[in-house]
Length: 579
Ligand code: AMP
Image (tube, rainbow, N blue to C red; front, top):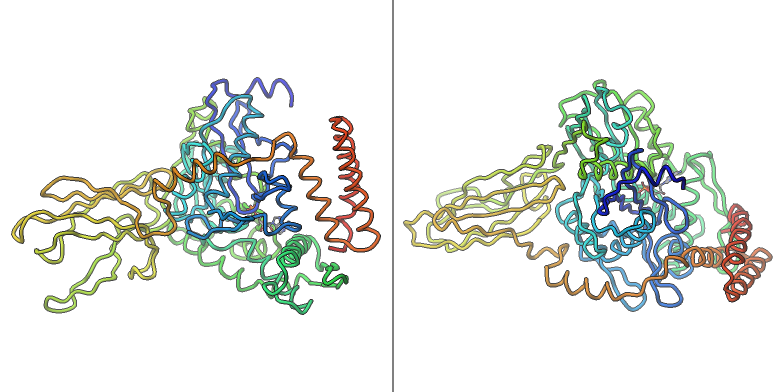
């Protein structure tokens, strides 16, 4: 790093960092006088795989080492946990099980340590990006993950909005309307933004929180299993992890090539699998089709036509796939732009937002507004006959694509004058029936007085710039406000549980940062050993023994040199076919 760069870093000791917490990879960046800058991890890489696991010494490993150990130690390693954010699903690692907030907190802790090492001072606050289509429970879970990592969330920024900020900054005086298609590992978002004289306004967002590049990998793993005569769910965890890793590698190869082949070691024998781009497109077509609806909805919600869009920007690693690019090109009759690396752009945008929040002078003419991507409301009953009411209907309070922050209130009366309480059930979604929408939480409001008293209640929804909802209810008679308590929602952790888990997490042993490179290389060699057969396997075995010998001598220069040499050899092995 050169001196002038360090001199351009913000001098205040409270630097806000920008984090892209991704399904497959995560990144951290900071805003400087020179613009947004990515921060490398302890391996010198910008992308930290979102993978967490126990190392041989029982300490937690985050990033590349864990990504390799997914192949050799699947029972001790976890990945793709962002998909479980805001659910009560726990992933088992050895003898303990963890929620997505906890696993994500290890990634955030690692990014925070990288930022602190880079900046030379402590960091305790961040702007974190989330899929625009993350619901309220998923957003609150992300804030909890940050709290577990000792980070205060200054703001959650929607991923496509972050991407647009990074692009918009390149041409800040321009006037244009752009559409951002963001297909990451696990989520899909579409946003339409309008930019004029430094003001960036999100007009509409749509998406699918459960659709991403990983679904394409899963479909290919199933196809490869079919060719091998096994079902991915029926093979051992180790073989399943290797099969999925092979599917991931072949999927990426198909982005460039018309066909991909590899040998897969199964029961001590190398078996050949082959897939053409045509076949891959055929088996993934049902997934591809799901991209259309959110794109169409965003355009119609913004009251635009495809021709009104000046720029089409693609973001997220999975938009590199030929079929995705072809779909976008077909829909808009032009090629999408991707001048900023699709893996980096969201983190860079999160850093721009951090710069905006810190009122960085280089951004004093930039203003950004966002919208809430879905409708928020509550359950009501409608009268279906004399004294007969039917529950289950959805009454919207904040319509989708309303500019945030927003606060809206309505006065609601109980159905019967004899009622002692009203149970508000808060939902998110677009269906007229609550059963098809997502329950966010419940709010129980006690009512005082007799049948003749005023029992109406003012219900207020406030949606902040992070897309986090607060609901308050105030009985007209008492003026005593009740706040939304997330109850009966397994996706949210109650406050006492957060405190308890925070203590347990703080006590966990984390692998030392300065030994991450060695840990990653050993994990990589072990994966190469398991993935190979015959002579190659024997060579990898010799390399492992050699490196362990070097490590035992504890000479940092010798270790660094051995690492460089071995990495080059392993890199060549990995390019070979046997997997
Ligand atoms: P992101 O969350 O933006 O890092 O996107 C990760 C997703 O992009 C994963 O599903 C990757 O498999 C996928 N991906 C990354 N690079 C490529 C590529 N060259 N071809 C196809 N898919 C890719």
